[in-house]
Image 1 (cartoon, helix red, strand yellow):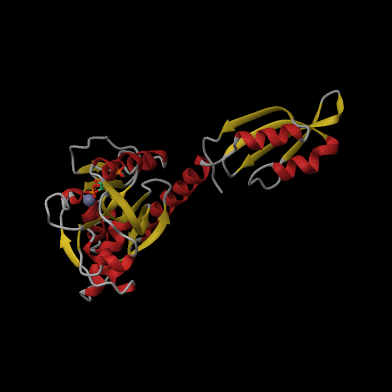
Image 2: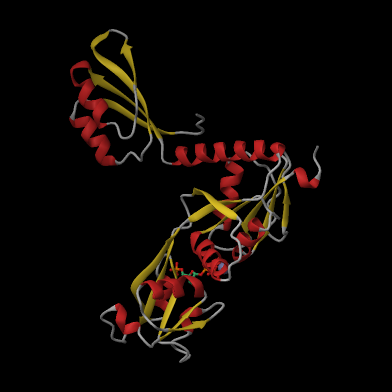
Length: 300
Ligand code: PRP
Ligand code: ZN
């Protein structure tokens, strides 16, 4: 039953901002594969799951055309394809099924530091360089601004220096690229995060079982990343207040402490980050012996 078409195929960015995080996430889901970024194809050694390492721009097409079952790709790429295909009346045969916790960036309009700009209507009649033609066109239509879109497949940030455009519309994550090119952001067009998409094509029951398993593990990994296990000692009299202060925990486990009637031990899984302030508040409420531990795995 392990024929090629019975193996789940997942498209992942070959090299870029999502690559390392995506491969790490899939490994945490228990998929073992030889990590060779020079190869297009990674064979899953312990599950009927293979990875295709491709350009991020190709991922929505591969999933839509049912060559891959799943893909991990930035929302910016998804929106660019979705809008482009819809405009050409071509079907969009994939759906977004998970938002991940990495690959955060924004698509913004920026301009040279020294240029003047006061409002969006200043874009009227201007030339804007971008590789996100569809997203930008859609944005301009919504804002009722008529500007000329100049397509750049890459290195968009040098367009103003080359005299090819007045503005650019490009991705920003740290802001280093804008700063290095003496550009400043004037408007945000789209917030993007790594996203899991799946094909709308029919998936066999055998493959679907594996996909469900992967998604369930993936949810566990995402949940665990922001979860902590807290242990502390609390005076019985302060138990209600201390329970209230535990971030994102449901029912904590309360246990007696040997030879100590007025105190109990409290253990809780907190489904939110535990900050120093939280610990300080717990201490002020009477908690002692506070211990915060990372959570390794979770399954619901
Ligand atoms: C984007 C963008 C900038 C850079 C911005 O390219 O085009 O060059 O990232 O990041 P920063 O704010 O941290 O400097 P990316 O590497 O995503 O390549 P791609 O658009 O070709 O996929
Ligand atoms: Zn790209």
